[in-house]
Length: 482
Ligand code: NAD
Image (cartoon, rainbow, N blue to C red; front, top):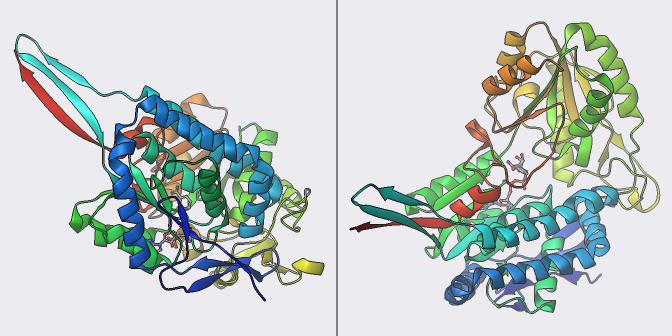
C-alpha cells in the first residue's frame, strides 16, 4: 500500500526528512493509516532554523503594513479552501466535520487576520521624567522562534502561535503534533501557492522527544511557545530554561463547571452539554468536573443525561454527527482506563463510557459514548487528573465556600465556568477561583484581545492580543537625558 507522504517545509521548499524515515498517520474514524509523516531529527531542525535565520533580517525589516498584507493573503488562501481544510482536519483528528467548519478552520483564518492587524497596531511605551528626560521602549523581534502545538485543535492552535510570532517580526520553526499533522501540511501548501517569503515559516514534523526537543535546545531558537500536556511543559522548561530562552507554556486543565440553583437553567443545560463533550471532551477548556447546588442536583442530573444520550455518535465526515472519534488508540485506552478507575474509586457510571462500534468503513474507529459519573469525592484521582476525553463527573454541593474549595482543589488552573444569576456571587466567586479564565453564564466565548492561559500546573505566560505580541518581542529601553 502506498500512502501520501507529508513533506517538511523548509526555506520555502518541500523536503523529505534527512533520515528518509516516516511515521504512520492514522485516521481515528477508521483506525487505519492514511498518510505518512516525516520522522525528522535534529538535522532537519537545524536546516529549518538555518532557513529561518537567513530570512529573519528581511522579515523583521519589512514594513509592518507589508508583513500584515502577507498574513492577510495567507488567511484568504485558507478561507478560500475552508471546506478542504475542514474535511482534512476532521479526517486527521476524528472530530465532526461540522465542528471543524465552524470552529477550527474559521479560527485559524481569524488568528492570521487578527494578528495581521495587530502588526499595524502594536505600539510601545514612553516614560517621561519631568525636567530630566524621556525613556522610550523599542519592542524588537526575537529572531527565530519555535512554535509547538498539540493534537486536539491542530490548525487552530498552531496558527494561534505562528500568527503573533510572524506579526511581531520573527521567523518561525513550527512543529505540529505527530498525531495530527495534516492541516499544517495544507498550510505549507497555501504558503507555497501565494509565494509567502521563503524561510519565514518553516514546518518540521516528527516526534516530540526528537523533533520537538531539537527545536527547544537549538541555540538559535530564542523563544518557545508550547501548548500541550503539563509533563511535556515541565520537560521543555527543564531543557530550555537553563539556556535562558523565553518560554510560553499552555498546559493541561481539569476545569470546574459550577452550577448554582438560581442559574438560567435552559441556557446552562445546553451549554454544559457542549462544555463537557465538544470535540469528544478533548478541549483543554472543557469543564470535566460539574458541581451542582443540591436543590437543583437531581433535576439537572436527569435532564443532562437525557441530553447527553441524544448526542449522535457517528462518522466524523457525516454532517449530522455530534461526537466523532477520539484521537488515537492509545488515547482511547487511556480514557477507558480512567472510566474503570472511577468505578474502582466508588463512582457510578450513569450513562456512556463504552466503546462504540460503528458500521462500514468506521468499524475499527475509536469511538466512545459520553460518560457521566457520580458518587465520587473531589479528591479522588478521577477528579484530580486530566482525562481529556468524553468523561465528566457530577457532584452536589451545599455552600459557596465548599464548592470554591473543591473547584480550587486540583493542581490545575486553566479555566472555570460559573452559572448564577446572582451578580455579586458571580463576581465574588470569579475573583477567588484559581484559574486564568473564568466564564460566567457562558463557555468558550472568545475575544482574541484577551489574555489566554492558566495558573498553577496549567501553564506559565499568556497568549492572546498584545500579550502574545509582547511575548514574541524583547523590550529595549532607551533613556535620553535633556
Ligand atoms: P503533548 O504534550 O504530548 O504534545 C504536545 C506537543 O509537544 C506535540 O507536538 C509533541 O510532539 C510535542 N512534544 C512532546 N514531547 C516534547 C519534548 N520533549 N520537547 C518538545 N516537544 C515535545 O500534548 P498532546 O497530547 O498533544 O495534547 C494534549 C494536552 O494539551 C492536554 O494536556 C491538553 O490539556 C493540553 N492543551 C492545552 C491547551 C491550553 O491552551 N492550555 C490547549 C490545548 C491542549
